[in-house]
Length: 88
Image 1 (cartoon, rainbow, N blue to C red):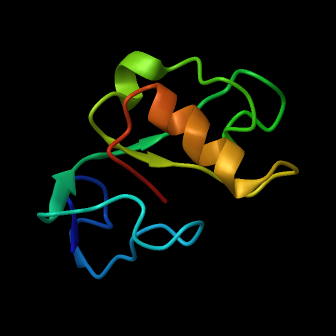
Image 2: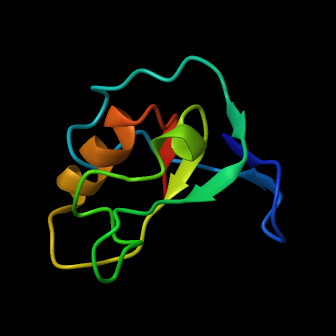
């Protein structure tokens, strides 16, 4: 379960435990947090293909990233490195 606190998307959602390596990130309780749009400071700055520049805003939050030219695992690692608790 994933609960979003802010934005017009606020509410409860079913979520999957990463699609990269199933079960490798144990989630023992629902995640409840605000959404924050990732910013990597490079053209198309919301795709999280580079290290994020808004780490303070991402820390402890659910990072929102847009599709781009890089691998999804790179996006997640960049968000995780800044303390994101989940990535959409």
